[in-house]
Amino acid sequence: MDTLKDVPEFFETQLDESLAARTESLASFRELGPPDLCHITKANAKPGVKEVGSYHYVSGVDASSSATLAAYLNSLTYALEDTHAWFSKSSAWRIRSGVYCCFNAFSRVDVRVEVKIPGGVDSYVVDLRGEKHEATPDIWQETYISALLRSILYSDDVNYRLAGFRKLDPIPNIEAEAHFLEATEQLFFKGWQLGSDPEIQVATVVSNHLTAGIMKYFSENFRYERAVNLFEKLYLRDPEVASLLAQSYIGMGRYNSKNIKSINKLS
Image 1 (cartoon, rainbow, N blue to C red):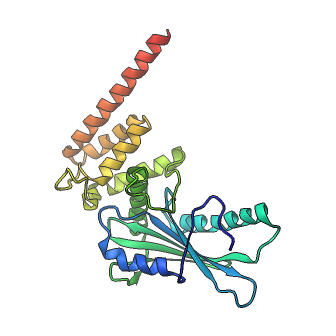
Image 2 (image 1 turned 90 degrees about the vertical axis):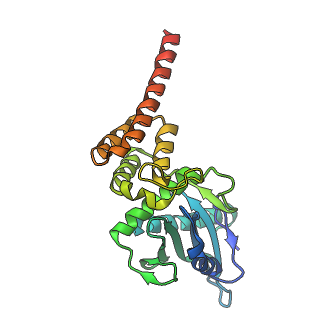
Image 3 (image 1 turned 90 degrees about the horizontal axis):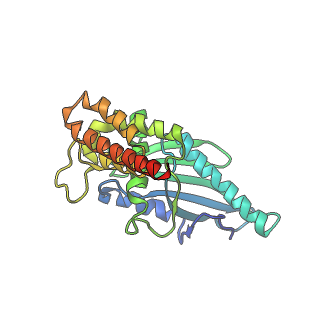
């Protein structure tokens, strides 16, 4: 059996069992939900050889549309081809299809993209009862932010990272950061729906997983000025945002003072 190069894989005993297990568990998902699940089906050109299913967990994939998730699934075909290049000139195995599952923590549904290779792309929503629905633009935006927050807040947590976990950079460039800012501004006042850390008993507009993710990302990347710009706009809509704006100003001041001290030492 050919494996994917540099991608973890669990092989199924029964085809699609990981997808069935996820569907059955949807109602038990809490807070931001589990990591994204990527399932692929491999077929062999030899007659009589059964198809094989494998899966891995991943964070950091752009979940803003069916096209971006389909692109990730398609990229795995190259990982299989890379394996062939290392060990043999050709292989009878190929990826026949793939399913990407991403939990939308706002609407509490699983967004899934199915890719048939070669063939088309199908996207849909699975609700807590296992029923399928259309994936609307609003659902996609919520799913995009849900995936980003899991990556920012949880991907370094050893208790969250399951075996077979692949971690990618969720915001690899300035364009991705701008997209993140735009989406967080639009969804900001729904952030309380996501819940919050255990020490905060009741999630509020300014204390929830969305605000925690915003602060963590911009503090770790020393880009408080972007957080300030965001919260200044949101403050005009709700004065409660003043607390987040103040935290960002303080963080920006600390960073700037450290830079000034470093420059003074060098001069």
